[in-house]
Structure formats: structure tokens, C-alpha cells
Image: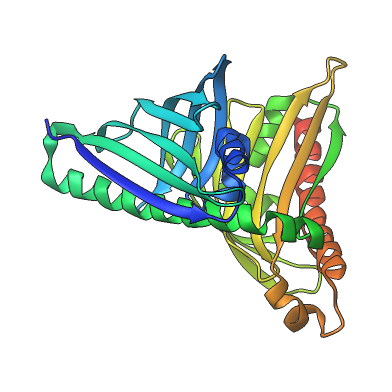
Length: 314
């Protein structure tokens, strides 16, 4: 069997310990790395963890499970896929963060991989995916680390949650949100939907929604449905005022015969388009308020219809 080894690297204008912390905390990966849709920690221990990753590779949505070993002393993280997805037979590697001074570090990303049946075309597909994703991830890591302070000072990144209590079962509310292919008949603000589920629980949702002012916006998201309690998503076709939009729907049995349904959003504002959309005098705060209102309006509408559906079903 042919095992290929490749290495990618980038220099980051930040202390090595800061970069390592960002790589070690997978909960932020969907916000940092363009290919990453969602990550779930399935097991954690002393410097060991098992994670389930959903991400795109060469434009296709894939998912796999990896075991990671974290070494904060040497600033290394090794990973090995336990459950792979075709055409990958085996995949592993190491993140290495090397101090280059007080405020600079070199990040090296090593991969080794094999293709199922050593197929040459599959090897080429994997090589292309690894190269594309590694290049995108390292560039995004550099941008995120170096811009983190600026983003925080300008308040570009923010999160919020809308919640309703439902007198019904969590599964019924989950089903309403999960069955997004039926949203045009169930949700007044959704005009059309293109919905695929290439693997169980992994969904591609493209839809046209009507805003309060009557305009129609097209968005595309990848979604990950986890049992009947959570649907995580990442928008990849974004409205003009956003550079990032991730979130999740959760459905929690309160133990009182009711369900708490919530819609969480994490958004980063696209400052380049504020003036063109909201006017020359508009500020980041104005853009935040506008985006918050638009997303919250749609979330609350969806939660309200999910509540009605679950209570009728109940």
C-alpha cells in the first residue's frame, strides 16, 4: 500500500502558545476553518480526545472520527482517523507550533494517508483535498489569530440565542426543524428550498427566504443532525453583511412535560458592505443590530411554527 506524506506550513504573527490554544479547542473550528462544518467531542481524557468532524473536501460534505493526542509542553497535536470516509483508507498527521520569537510562530501541518485499494485516482483526489484544505486552514488560522484582537475591539463577532418553551415533545419540535425540505409549505418566510441528505444526519440546505422588506435572499448551509436533540449548521453562501454565520438548534426535555427549543447564532460582520447596504453613516453597531434583528425574526418564526407543530402533534 502506498502511504503518502505531505507538509504545509505558515508563519503567524502571534505567540506560539496562543496559536496552540486555538488549535487545541475544536469547539471554535467551524468559526476558524472554512472547510469545517461542525465538530463534536465524543470522548475526553488526559491529553487525549476522540472527535467527530464534519467538513467539506473538494466541495463534497464528508465526516470522520479522529483520535487526538495533545501535548501542550511541546506544542504538538497528533491525530489519527479512526473511522474514515471513502476514498480514504487511512489518514493521520501532526500540528506542530514552533516559536519564532515572542510574537511570531511557525505552524506546520503534517499529513500521511492511504487510499482504498491504492487506487491512483483516489490518491490524487485525497492529495487535492488535503492540499486545498490544509492551505485554506493555515491561511484562516493566520487571519483569525492576527485579526482576533481587531475583531474584538470592533465587536465584529457576536452570538445570541432565541428560546421558546413548547408544551410538547422534543422529538416533534426537532422533526419540524429537521424536515427542512418541507419548509416552503410550513414557513411563510421560506420561498423555495433545495434539500439533500448525502449521508444520514449530514444535510445540504439551500433556500430562498423573504426578508421583512420583501426582498428575497438565497443562502446555502451544511447541517448536522445529532440524534433528536441538536442540529448544528454552517452557512457557506452568506448575506452581504456577514463574513461568518454558524449556529445550532437545540431541543431539551425540561422534565416538566415541556420542551425548551433554542436557536443559537454566531455571526461576524462584513464591514466592507455596511455603507452600501445601510448608508454612509451606518456603524458596526447598526450592522450588528440589523443582522441580529433579521436572523432573530426568522429564528423566532421557525421556533413559533415548530411550537405549533409539536403542540398539535402532542
